[in-house]
Image (cartoon, rainbow, N blue to C red; front, side, top):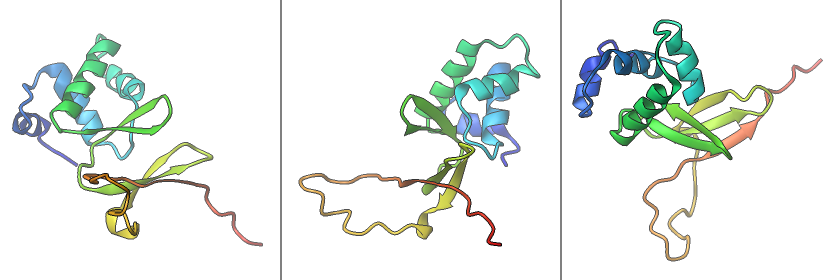
Length: 135
């Protein structure tokens, strides 16, 4: 949880404004991986006059400046992740909820042997369902 979002914004070269701080308060302190529409709906509760375009532009600025990460985990779906340290993701196929998976919990072997590509980053995205309790 980030208590001083305005300072975090300044550290990333972002000038704090009331609307930007409101968006940052939500997105940096949520345990979710919210879409822009989800951020807009939540921020709108406290700032009813904030526009969808302002939220979209703010999130894009935050991602561009490295304050958050923009994730494309499914076709036609963009979500934002405030957790910047390396980690993977698990998507619950029943609920759509995205869970963080610690980096060291997933081992990828032979990643350096992919033809003529030099790998500079990778992320594993897993899909699954909770196991049903046995009777």
